Length: 195
Image (tube, rainbow, N blue to C red):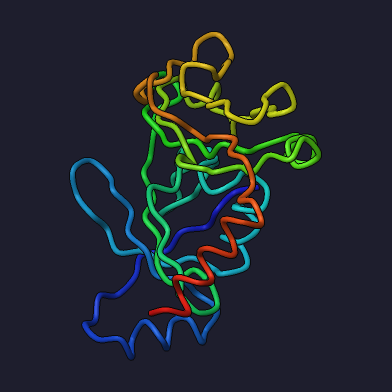
């Protein structure tokens, strides 16, 4: 699957970008050799790429008859309907290591809940460095061995050889807390009523 990228005429104003979206296109920028080139892509094509490779995935694109490897540097979404309204592409070399934020996906939440624990999440992704072909779409973290009162740290994450985690190893990804007791809930409700 290849993303077809076209050069975009730069005309100032929201009307121009709205018109582009009505035509089924999404505006963006391509960062290439130190310059930012205004581009546009087919909305369906971009959504298909994201569906297949993820928002941090590596994929091929064609721009002005040249094929290259790229990743999505940034995506801006509409706050109401979450549709993509703008994006940035960053060409990369498969022979050079890159730094990226990778989302953390949790597994075993049901087991934590069955133990009476409440997951308090503090970190959604971690920064890694690796060759493009080694970077996963997400990092899976199994919570099934954790108990109430435990913390999960960045240093607890296991990754494949060749991937270096750049995030602070002492940073807490999540904590397993006890659920609030009925007494605590009553006290909170009384405080709210008094206010």
